Amino acid sequence: MKQLFVFIRKEFYHVFRDRRTLLILFGLPIVQIILFGYALSSEVKNIGIVVLDNAHDVQSEQMISRIATSRYFKMQKQVLNYPDIEKEFRKGNIKCAVIFPTRFGADLYSSTGARIQIIADASDPNTATILTNYLNAIIADYQQQLNPNIRPSYQIIPELRQLYNADQNGSLNFIPGVIALIFMIVSTALTSVAVVREKEMGTMEILLVSPFKPVMVLIAKAIPYLVLSLVNFIIILFLSVYLLHVEIRGSLLLLFAESILFIITCLSLGLLISNVTNSQQTAMLISMMGMMLPTLLLTGFMFPVENMPWVFQMISRILPSRYYYDIVKAVMLKGLDFSYVWKETLVLFGMSVVLLTLALKKFKIRLS
Image (cartoon, rainbow, N blue to C red; front, side, top):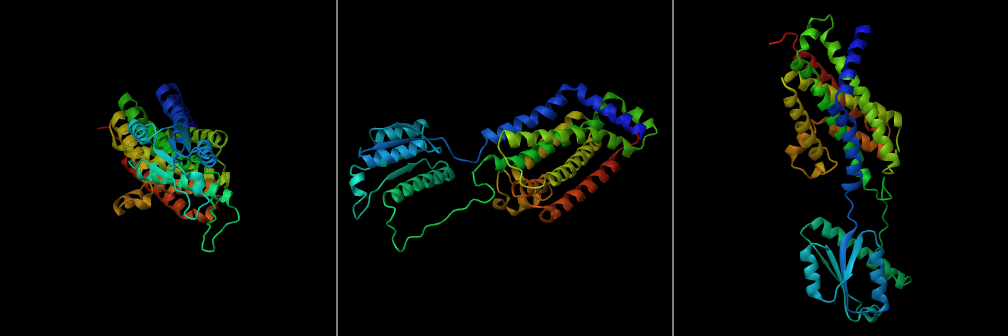
């Protein structure tokens, strides 16, 4: 054990002396959590909108005020005619326009009712649909305020309940995926160059002639990154709770245990990559590009896996990050216990055993 601690201390020295490694280890996770939490949000808000008010009555002014004060829209200006609306669309300043007819206020109380024209930029169909739904909700709310007691017998009034995210916090969708992405990049990429670095520096001979067994060499190289990854995890949780206002609903102990298991899986994958490559550049390329893009695209936090062709759904099932993402969502956001995530935990444990076994078998005790 004394020899093991000596090797572990040596690996810590390697990490702390390399500024680039420290930047990847601690700088990259903080930047990603802030970027995905603030800049990359699935919410549609602060969308440019213009209004053409041909009525100029009290009712149209009230409607315009409701739209302007909504957090979903950012009022640009009130245009004077249709060509002005077309110019604003072409400039890209707006994605939506609302046009009030001349007799809007009077028609509200007529038998035929009042009409409002909504024009949306459908170059992005999903955004256009969301914007029109927002405006329809504002219109329906205003109409209900005008006639609170008039409800036709055939009217259906839905009651909406948002499970797990009543405040519509967009960060909740990204935090589990970002945590998985950070661990895949940091743990896998940095560990992947651990053995290769010894080969390039010419110090592998010293390790091979030492009385240390190969398994102890790999453990000594993995433990520092395991410890530092856990420090990273604590920083991520701190930023998520106090900066992005994400509530941890489930067991913190279970979340830590599952994270340790996933980190071990990533470290095992990194050690395997390190043992089958001969240069740090190749190892870093495989670990960064080979792991980052599949984690981004196939895990499910950016694009729903259910919408993908079955071939890509099958590929996503061999990614450890896919299972860890589901675990973090269940425990951290939904407050579920171990009985709901034992299958994913078992898969991660099996992947860890297989990857670590392959890493040990691929560890060459003789230099070619």
